[in-house]
Structures are given as structure tokens and as C-alpha cells.
Amino acid sequence: MSDPILTVEGLKAYYRVGQFGKNLDIRAVDDVTMQIERGEIYGIAGESSSGKTSLIKVLAAAIRPPLQVIDGSVRYDFGGRIIDPTKASKAELAEIRWKHLSYIMQGSMSVLNPVRRIEQTFRDFAQRPLGLSGAAFRARVEEHLDHLKLPTSVLRSYPHELSGGMRQRVTIGLATVCRPEFMIADEPTTALDVVVQKEVLSLLRTVQQEMGASIIFVTHDMSVHANMTDRIGIVYAGRLVEEGPTRTLFTQPKHPYTAHLVASLPMIGDTRPRPALEGRPPSLADPPKGCRFHPRCPMATEICSREVPPLESVGDRHRSACWHADEVRPLVEPAFDKAAGGVRA
Ligand SMILES: Nc1ncnc2c1ncn2[C@@H]1O[C@H](COP(=O)(O)OP(=O)(O)OP(=O)(O)O)[C@@H](O)[C@H]1O
Image 1 (cartoon, helix red, strand yellow):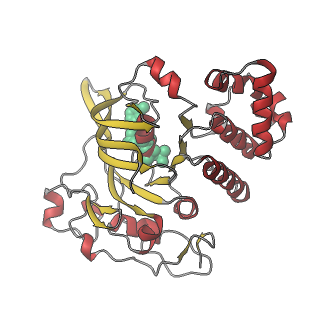
Image 2 (cartoon, helix red, strand yellow):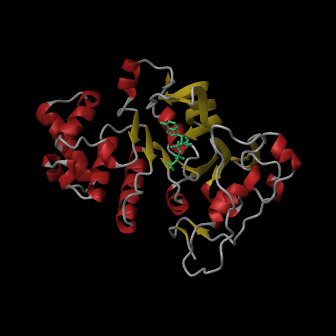
Image 3 (cartoon, helix red, strand yellow):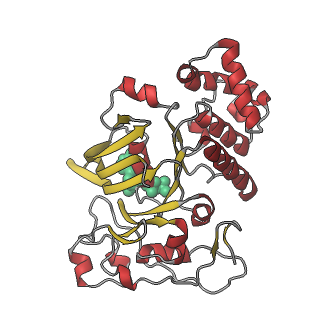
């Protein structure tokens, strides 16, 4: 049964910028409607500049000008306590942050203050929500780090004294110490090498399972999505164009853009040429009419340049915004096995 912790309806968030004396709207999030279930890992995928970070900034209540919410609603249900982060007061947000909602931003250094030891950063973030102080607080943090198999000696370190992988683990420690119900992770492993990346992802998944938390997980790396997520939302030019269970999206994509994203995944031992996607994503200041993907779409017909396709159900928990959803086929033979590590040759 559906038990959404987050419901987003008709969300529009634009960057309002001035250019050559004129006001310009960059429509980074344009009419997004989605729900996240309690305990699920929901991945957001899409190429660079598609609006992934802008969307989660709104969801994480981390909006700064020139980004503005223009329309729509965001509704969290934290055990019966309903909160819209786009309308909540500073005091309300301070109450939910870390305790109910935590945000692992791109690049650990943006969270870890370079001139404060890790222990001080833990105090800054978590002391208030945990309602502990002094030795009791320190004991709780040490117990948590121990549980995550992180040496408690990191508490005495400054961020620059730690490796990138260790810093990212510490960030996960920070984001989880108050046992939030909802976590938002933006490209948490992008800067790390593959081995460290796997370790960090496995740590994140373990804590998520133990806490029963929901995660929105953003990355442009489809192989990470294959390994981590229960469902994926595909974003193109500010719009959610397809959404469905991870396996379904990999094996039966119903949007030509998803079919290309999935096909672009390198697979060990498969040297067949990959079908390349022509062109570049459109400007979000002046996106094309109709389906925003139509100028690049090999399946586009006249209606695609005229009318915006609605995001409609095409199967079990599967929605697609494409006039030709029924005709979309995978571009390569899919090989998906999550239990064996997601995508395989
Ligand atoms: N501060 C800003 N002012 C104006 N436009 C911005 C600002 N930040 C982002 N944008 C624009 O908003 C659009 C969406 O950017 P966003 O960072 O959300 O995309 P993304 O999918 O997260 O990209 P990436 O994968 O590269 O992080 C882009 O066109 C970008 O140029």
C-alpha cells in the first residue's frame, strides 16, 4: 500500500535573473509531480544542467536567490507532522533539519567547515536536534561512528587531514547521526574513485536499511542508479519525463531519452557501438515548445513539437511523458541483475 513520505505537486522553481536589462526565467524545475514512499531509495537521473540539483534544493529547503518557487507544493509527512519546506518558517525548518530531513550536498567540503575540527561540526549540526550535551553527546557520536566502522579519531581531525573517501563517510555519519526519516544525497560519490565509491554507497545503503529511511539519490551515473535505487525519475530539461521501478526502467524504458541513457551505460565485454544521442539539451531560458526532447528525438512527429505530453501511467508504478510511449523499445539488449550488482555484461 502506498505510504508517501513526500508528495510534490506541480512544482515550478525558476532562476530569476537579469540579462541585458531584461528579466529572464531559467525554468530549472518545471511542473514536477512525484511521490516518494517511506523507506524507498528514489534515484534522480538526467544529464548535466537538466535541473536535478535545483529540484532537490527545493526539496531540501536549501533555496537561495535567484532560485524561486513559482508554483506548486511540496509536502512531507514526518510521522503525521505535515510540513511544506517551501512555506515553512525558519524555526520550523531548524526543527526538522537533521532530525527528520538531512541533505548530503555535492562535495563534502561544502558541509565540513575547513577551519573546524570534525567534532565541532558534529556539535554545530547535531547537538541541538539530539538534545544532548557534553560527554553524553560525544558518547552518542562515537557510538554512531563506531557503528559505521569509522575511527573515532576523525573527530579530532580537520577536514583537509582526511582523504576524500573518509570525508564523504564522515558526511554520511553527520547526515545520519540524528536518524532522519528522509535523506537527500546529491552526487555523493562523484569525486571518488570506483573502489571508494562502492564502499561509500554500501555504507549509505546499510544505514538507510537500518533506519528504514527514505532517500532521494541524485547522480548522472546510471550504473550507480542500477545498484542503489528502488525507483528512478528521469529528468530532462527541467521536467520529469519518465519514472518507474529501477528494473523496469532499465529493461522496458517508455521514453526515448531513458532508452538512450540506459543504452549509454558501458557494459563489460560488450564492444558493440552505442547509439549516440545527437544534439545538446535545450536552453532552459527558452525551451522548445511541446515535448522538450523533440528536437533530439529520433521518434518525434508533428504532435511532439506542438503539445506537451502528459506524464501518464504506462504500467505498474511506471509513468512516461511521451506521445509515442507504446512504441519505445530498448536500444540495446538489457542486462540487469540488481542482486548481482546491477548491470552486468
Ligand atoms: N545560480 C544560478 N543562476 C542561474 N541559473 C542557474 C543557477 N544555478 C543553476 N542554474 C541553471 O539551472 C539549470 C539547472 O541546473 P542544475 O544545477 O539544477 O542542473 P543539474 O542537472 O543538477 O546539473 P549537474 O548534473 O551539472 O549538477 C541549468 O541551466 C543551470 O545553468
